Amino acid sequence: MPVPRLSLPWFPGIVLAALVFTAVFAPYLAPHSPTDGDITQKSIPPVWMERGDREHPLGTDRFGRDVLSRIIWGSRISLLASIVAIGVAGTFGTLLGLISGYRGGLTDTVLMRLTDIGLSLPTILIAVVLVAVSEPSFRNVVLVIALLLWPRFARQIRGETLAIKEHDFVAMAVVAGRSSAWIIRRHIFPNVVPTLLVISTLQVGYVILLEGTLSFLGVGVPPPNPAWGLMIADGRGFLATAWWISLFPGLAMLLTVLAVNLMGDWLRDHLDPKLRQLGRAAVLESPATAPVGGIADEAPGRSTPAGAEPSPSPWRWDP
Amino acid sequence: MMRFLVGRVLQTVLSMLVVISIVFVLTRLSGNPIHLLLDVNATERDQEILTRYLGLDQPLPVQYAIYVKNLARGDLGQSILSRRPVAEHIWERLPATVELGFVAMFLSVLIGVPLGVYSAVRRGGIMDGAARVFAVLGQSMPTFWLGLMLILFFGVVLGLLPAGGRGGLEHLILPAFTLGYFTSAAILRLTRSAMLEVLGSDYIKFARLKGLHEQVVLWKHGLKNALLPVVTFAVMLFVQFLGGAVVTETVFAWPGLGRLILESITTRDYPIVQAGVLVLSALYLTGNLFVDVLYSYLNPRIRRAGA
Image 1 (cartoon, rainbow over the protein chains, first blue to last red):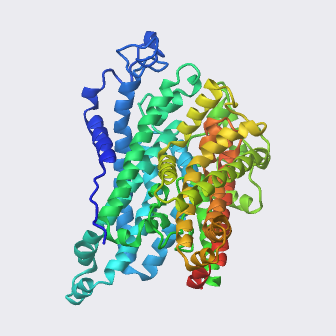
Image 2: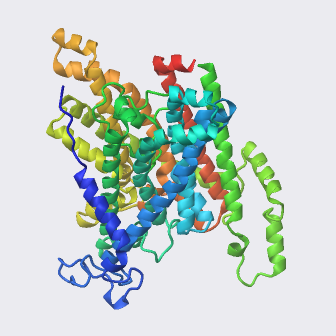
Image 3: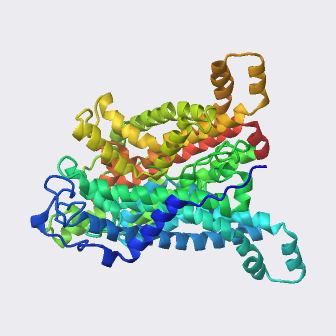
C-alpha cells in the first residue's frame, strides 16, 4: 500500500497569503495614489525599459496613474468581491440546500426546479444585462454575481444533506423528538461544512474572473476604481504604445485565480473525505463546481464528466 | 425516459420564461430612453407623444403582457434608434456569432482531443505534465486579457494577424483561439479521463493480446469509445460559446450578436437588448436541452436511470 504523501500547497499558499497581505495593507504598500495621476507622467514604461522611471516600477497609465499602486489597491476589489458574493450566495444556497435535502417532498421539488433554472441560465449574458441596467457599481456587481452563484451551493449541499440524513444519529434525534431546525443545525450543517469550504474556494476564482469580465466590459465596478478588469480595458486602445497598462493587471488576475484554483483542488482532495472517495471526477461532474473544478487527474473509476447525471456537466463559466 | 424528456422540456420553457421576465423588468427599470432619443430642446409635449408612441405610458404589467403576446407571435419589436425591425438587426449579426462559435469549437476539439489522448497514454510523462499546465492555465486565464495579449503578440509585435474585425480566415484565428482555449483545456481533461477509463478496460487488453498494432488499439478501439462524452461536451461548448460570445466579440471588434447587445445597452435601445438576450438564451437553452436528450439517448446507463 502506498504511503500517503502529505504535500502542502506551497505555491498557492504563498501567493494567496501575499495577496491577502497586499489587500489588507494596500495603503501602506502602494507607493502612489491609485486614482490620482499626474498627467505629465503619463504612459511611462516599466522601470527596466528605456524611458522607465524608478518611481513607477510597472509604469504609468494614460492618466499618469501608477500601475503598481493600482494593482495593489485592485487586489482589495477582487478579494472583497469574492468574499461578499460567496458569503451571500453561500449562505442563501446552503440554507436552501439544507432545507430542500432535509424536507424532501414538494419543498425539495420546487426548490430544485428553481435551482435547475438558475443553473441553466447563460451566466455572463445575464450578468451583463443585470449590471448594465442597474447602474454599474461595486454593490450591484457583487449582488448580481451572488444571484447567479447560489444555485451551485444549493445543489451540492442538498446532495450532501440527502446522504447525511440517512445516518442513524439523525434517526435517533428524530426519535428523541428534536425539531427539524435543531437537527439541521446540530447534525446536518456541521457535516456539510467541509464540502461548503471546498465549493466556496472553488468559486473564488470564478467570481474574480466574472467581476473582471464585467468591469472589462464597462458594466462592472465603475472608473476610476482600480479594478483589474477596468485597468485591462483602460490599456486596450494603447496595446501598440503602452502594453504594460493591460499586461500587468492581467498577470495579477491570472496568478490569483491560478492560486485559488490550485488551492481549491488541494482542499478538495484533502479536506472532503466524501469527494475524495468518489475521486476528483465526481466534483467535476457536478455543475456546482464544474467551471473552476480542477484537473481531472486520477479518476479512472468515474471519469466521464458528462456521464453521471442526465445533465452533462455544464461548464457554467462561459468565456 | 419519457418522463425525463417531458421534465427537461418543461424546465427549458420555465428557464426561458425566467429570462424573458428578468430582461423585461430590468430593461424597463433602467432609465428612460426618451431622454436619449430627444434632443435637449424637446418640449414636454414632444416627450409625451414619444412616450405614448413607444407604449411606455402603459403600466408595467400591461407592457409585459403586450411584450409576451408579441413574442409568442414571433414579433421582436422595433429598434428605438433605427426604427427597423429588431429581427433584422439580429439576423445581420447572428451569422458572425455562429461562425465564431463553430470555429472555436472545432479548434478546441482539434487541440484538446489529441493532447488528451496523448497525455492519457503517456500518463505521468512530460507531455502529461505540460498538458496539465495548459489545462490549469486555461481555467485561470481571464479570456479578455488572453485576447488582448494575443493581439499584442501576433498583431502588434509580429504583425502576422489582424487585430480585429471580420473577414477571411486570418481574422478568425485569434478570436477563435481566445474563445476556444479555455474549452480546449476542458476537452483535454475530459478526453484524458475518458481514455484512461477505456484503456483500463478488458476489451482494450484483449485487443492488445490479439496483437493489434498499438496505434490501432489506441485510435480505433480506444478513442472511439472514449469519444461519446467528448462529442456531447463539444456540442454543449458550442452552445456555451453563443451565450458567452459577448466578451470575445468585444475584444476583437467582432460584429456578432454579443457585441450588438452591449452596444444597445449603451444606447438604451431596449428592444434590441431584449431580443438579443432572448435569442442567445433560447439558442443556449435549447442547445443544452438537445445535448441532454442526445446524451441520455446514447448512454444506456442514463437511459435506464431516467426511465
